[in-house]
Image (cartoon, rainbow, N blue to C red):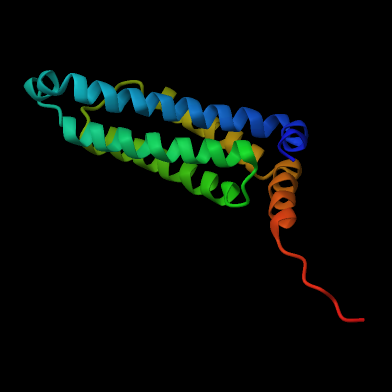
Length: 147
């Protein structure tokens, strides 16, 4: 069954899963760097505990989402939608509240909008929804019908 699932997975699911795993790796690096450079971050007034915790949370969430998408888990669609919205909201909260102002905010805003459009177009496509729904239907036990 695994080989048939891999061959039937739409390319857009592969790309989305790889994007999610890349973001997970990025946040895994944040976690590692926060631990490794703990004292340096403290010397510059940063909050290494916050950086480590947020990096770890997004690392684990990204791994779970990437795994769920790759295997076509039925919960992956809603989790990816929620994770995408949560990640963008967290990013802007972190950027606007916890960091010093940046001059490149228009570019970052445009990049975030393009990112959201890309993810939403993949998530709401017919092939994606059919693929993830098909997987959940395959796992439901068949109830006998009385005729």
